[in-house]
Image (cartoon, rainbow, N blue to C red; front, side, top):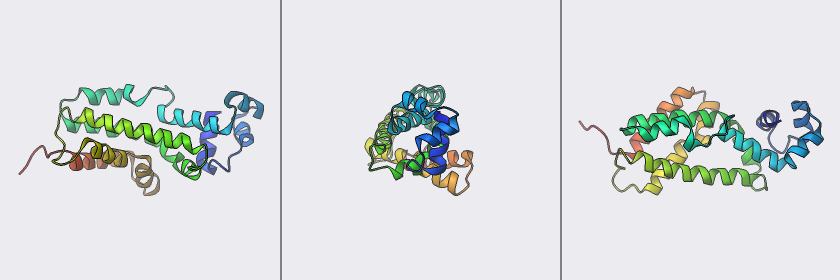
Length: 191
């Protein structure tokens, strides 16, 4: 049911997707869908959670890429772990962006707003991880560094470059790593 809802939300948008269409795509009775999720808003919440957490339902700070980044002894390797890991999440999240933007003012939009607030907190936590091995550029606060991560590693940025402009996931990851290292940290080598 979640796969059917995700596919239809990405294809048709949140508003145009009916519970009946989701049930039909999933091969279940619409009553089963309502019994399981109670409402379309609760269904979109479940789809969002699965989209962010993946099939294993593991929060990002407990995923292998995040744990690897926390053990790195240099910022470059940590940033590469992070951009690779976040790219795997964004491949699932980015196609849903238009559906969430379309309902930003509706109750269903609260799912996106809450998710984005959690993502911002997560980015600020990543700044703490990264500054264990490197200093931020002079005058750059941790808050502003978190804002840069929030933008560079955001689903809209990924969607624009990968889904709309045709970049590959490795190209996006390499660009994101360069952007983060260049914007946030004191250069490791000067010539």
